[in-house]
Image (cartoon, rainbow, N blue to C red; front, side, top):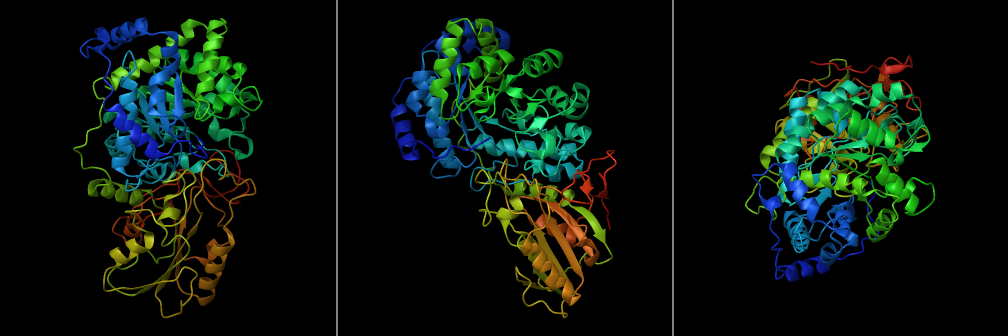
Length: 599
């Protein structure tokens, strides 16, 4: 989803409003819907019978925090708010988030019926918008572990940190099946193989075990667009769509996933946001998905092909089965348009009621009516146990592609030279969706770079020298560890239609090292397989590290043999970065799906 630019609401105004909300009395309306001992269906029916059309439409509306004040939450009965990527309170820490979320919740409870709201955030590899959070490997790395139990544990740890900031809902996991590595969201996919993706959807169990709603996204076929184009067109028969892209959603539904987010992409030319067949017939009726369907960021606007939100967009999406519309800055217009469409009979009340039943059921099931204030007596956020879990996940995700005997390195002795732009850069190794939407090079508070991890694991008896560009390397060194790869990116801006070759900086440092003839270990930090075939002969060892997140010492654990490499490729590694390959398609591969050496 897209971040809001610019943010329209200063955090200072929000916090001032929070103080004023403290004096606002909460609703006194009572009834069976407030009795937590009653069945959810009974509570939903009682509350729904009390709601006006305005209140129902409010529950179907999601605004971005930068475009709505707490007073407007009360006035318009808005049922959900989100943070776009990089949209954060000041200060951007746990306390700042708690104050913000609780202020909005106070405003929601001040409405006549006192229906709590849901706050959503893209916690896609840890609570990655918040300073100090533990940042886990992106999904492509977790897919390399082939460990559903590890994914579940990471889900639980992430959800614990999410809940500690007051947030109720994460837009994760992405259960896309990436079939073209040029796509900028490839690293959000666990694998090109739908069976592997389905198995790793166990992360949902972990997330929801901590009373945080999970979201399976992006429904359906987002990883199969022609040419790997973001928001593009997936050109497949229904049989192939079912075979390649549906299994992870079947698995997610078995895990009782709370919500499903619709893809920006199209299927054979029709926007998924407007497809009644895919959303209602297939997802809700055939697969019996009982949660609610949320749109992506302004995704409804794209249905009719014209700029902006139109009546046609709104009625098509709602009638197709979208239950909640993410209308970040145009939420007022959405409310007005949907109300007019209902009053004109173009959107039936039965559809409005169905959407509300689904949304309200999750609010009851996840205890939002009973848990209206954030627990301030917690200590797990960015904790040592969570970072240890992340380090373990990093080590298990490493895929050893080549080794002529130089690995594992010997700790406590020798001279090791470290080079490359990704050796000492936690921002690069964490990738997109880290503090900002696209991510950025540089420091991530609390993070450990791969270089720092090497220094720690190598111990005081070893000599570690670092120069990003390779300057100072000579033949006195026993080995050179060169950490290359990609800089951060996210959706759209990460598309590489021209191919996935190494950049000039990487090529230059590799050439400098190769010319000296020092044994060379290359660590590839990337969100997808890169074109390395033409360079591989000059390397003594190669390790695919993916995007490991803040715990770079996990990479060092494998380099020095503290952990034996066990990762297996979640994607076919193409022979040519401009020509993607998948298992069974007959295209040339440098390394096949499932490849991975060990010591």
